[in-house]
Length: 317
Ligand code: UDP
Ligand code: MG
Image (cartoon, rainbow, N blue to C red):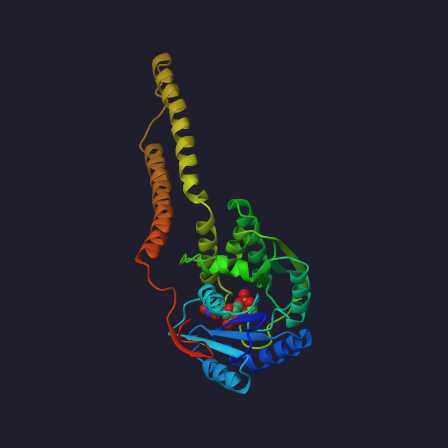
């Protein structure tokens, strides 16, 4: 039996065949330097390439590499969750598999952890090799979340971070299905800090989050998991329109009584108003639907993920 590791490094893997060997090499280099036992936990999120084979290969070569393979693609947040569920370390480090988060930052995070911090965020300085569109949407996203949700999500942090065991225990107890870890970690609290680093371009392969279609659900989860703001918008707007129409009623009555001219004529104005309000009502229904759908997901109580194969993971876990 292997010694219980002090550090667990978790990396979600989706079609990362060209980077896995390099990832292991770089992590091993850095972590051996640190000098305490560590494990690298790779969670294969239903990759369509040979990622699973490579994980098996790495595990047989170096038993400090452990692996989980999902039965299909369950998404990034769930892959990370499975990693947290199975990590054994006292400090757990989340990183992307593509080496965009340089492993060399980990010792700096460990230093902070030893100073007594429970969460050490990687704060992104420069972002190399990313499109203008990606940088702009990321910036907008962080600012919006910050304003809308009461949760204070540190700006320009990704998922690259170190967490103490007690933070991870808290997180693994939160079984919500539409997960937004970047918000859940600040929600948990404890002593948190950040270290700044340069985010590199991908080592190889390509990004899985580049289009609006992929990022929008992520943003929706982020907003709906932490605030009722969209629903409150409907309420505010309702009050606003009701107030305006009260004034309008008085105005129309007065105009009718005091002047001989007909103030409002034709169906166009009526039609425009009805369509406008109809639109607002449908949007409000849609917002309700977003929340209702999420409640439905929770109520079904399905397992968050299904494991197909595992390497170095105890069956009882
Ligand atoms: N990933 C995953 N499941 C998915 C999509 C991505 O586990 O459905 C992993 C991917 O292998 C990588 C990490 O999530 O390790 C970040 O993905 P990516 O590098 O494509 O995103 P970006 O860095 O461009 O935001
Ligand atoms: Mg990446």
